[in-house]
Structures are given as C-alpha cells and as structure tokens.
Image (tube, helix red, strand yellow):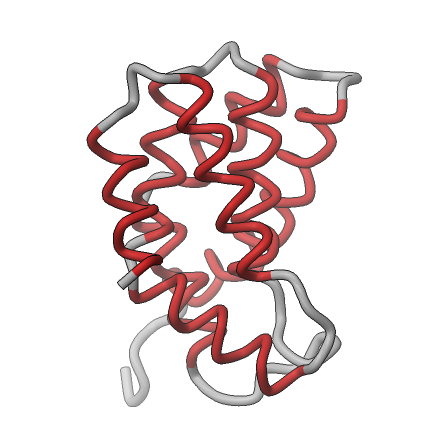
Length: 146
C-alpha cells in the first residue's frame, strides 16, 4: 500500500533531497498520534513497510543535509519509541529496536549527531540514539537458557 510506496521511493530515489525529506516527514506524520492502540498499529505498519532500512539509506545518501537527517531521526524516534507512554505492550517494541540496530541506524545517527552538533538535526539524532541504544541491549543479551 501507501507505506510501501513511501519506503520504496526513499530507497530508489535517493538522488532527490526534496523527495527524501518529504518521505521522512510523511513517515513522521503517519506515526503521529496520541491514542496508544492506534499508535502501536501505525508503528507496526511503518516497521513492516521497511522503514528502518529506508531511513538509514536516506541519511547515508545525504549525510550533510540537515533536513533529511532531522526528519529521518524523528521518524526513527517515533518508530522505535516505547509504546503506550513508555511501556512495551507486546514484543513489537523489542523487534523494532533490534531491526533499527541491524539496519545500521546506530552508526547513521552517530554520524548525524556529530555532523549537526548544536543544531536541531544533531539533537534529534541524539534522541534517536537514546531510543536505539535501549534496543541494542536486546542484541547483546544471551539467548534464553544459555
């Protein structure tokens, strides 16, 4: 559907800074909303559309473009952020956090934080790093029974 079209456009048309920025803003808008159950459904849908990888690729295509990096980080924060005011309702929070780690988002957000230090894009990258690093602990944990 529409979300797959957005993430596909982000991945295939990375020569257009305007398209990347608008695509990241679109994902932020889709993820916006205060009602917890609806927010969880939106997070799942955006995750399933491949947003983690698409956002990281957008940041990699334009590493010195503040708008793309700000909105990609903002979308990562909204996508990875804890459900329902900080509590994981189900396993999807951990799943999205692990996917963000695997997609290379840690390195992308670290680069953005350094490139845009003292600017809104750098601040948003810091917020994304905090959300992602919470999930990094999941990958470092030994499997159950180990």
